Length: 367
Image 1: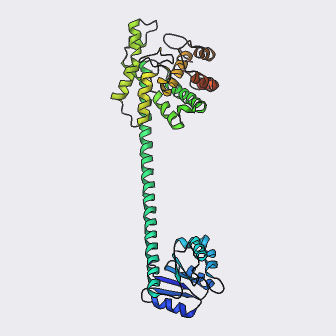
Image 2 (image 1 turned 120 degrees about the vertical axis):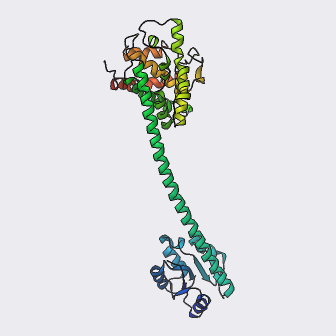
Image 3 (image 1 turned 90 degrees about the vertical axis):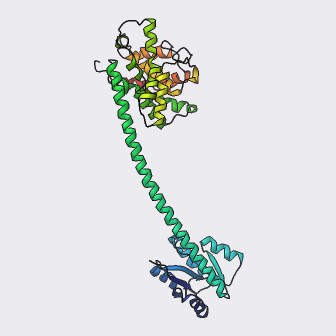
């Protein structure tokens, strides 16, 4: 509806007539002799009112009483109010602006000034409302776009998860490992990662990062697909040359992820490359392939390294029988399976029961 009406609160008939004559040719006019009458007119015509001229001194309800009555109804945010007063004191002005009036008209009236004040108020308020509407529409569009982007990201993540699961299943099949191996590594990594996150905030882990590390851990042994069957499946002790080939699965894995696998999630991609290359590094620098030492090894690679050792100890492989969980735990904390960070070992001890529960939850098929 077009806002083409001015509502005048003014008890003095002569003053009211002056204002009516100033705007009769441009606007429809509504007249109220007191505050209560004006509020009733405001309620009935609110959609068409362009501006309200509100006299401060009126019977029944004065100007400030009217403003007090309207302040909780959001009307002062929808229609500009201009106060008419013969009192130009600072206190009156301050009080009016606190209520939300946009300007003052002082008595006696100066017609040109009154017209300009009203035009300015209407123009400014129309611009304000248009701007608010524009911002509202933009926010709605942004919310719709965000919703679309979230759905697209969800689909991409789902595709990534299917791809990672498929690749990790190929590795399991290729290595004659249990289908549960990758699930255990992922769940162990999440469990240990949560413990590290709570105990050691300096690593700046978050639930989102842990989820990404969990998915990336599924590709930690992807490089083994480039190693000969005769070496991967050899039940006896490896020769030095064969062991060097086995060790190369770390660098080959990182290369495969970098050049042969398309992961749309950059964080998972970065974690996967790092974990594939560095999950056999040791805290004392005696690991491979780069001989990294201490916290030169990322916390993601450290986490996957420990849980991979635990899984290797507690499950049957072609070259060994499984150790029970107690033996495996002691071998890890005593350094019999390589050197790990004291912080990581503390975090591991904190969730030992949870890790053992996961081992039972995801048993190998032949168990």
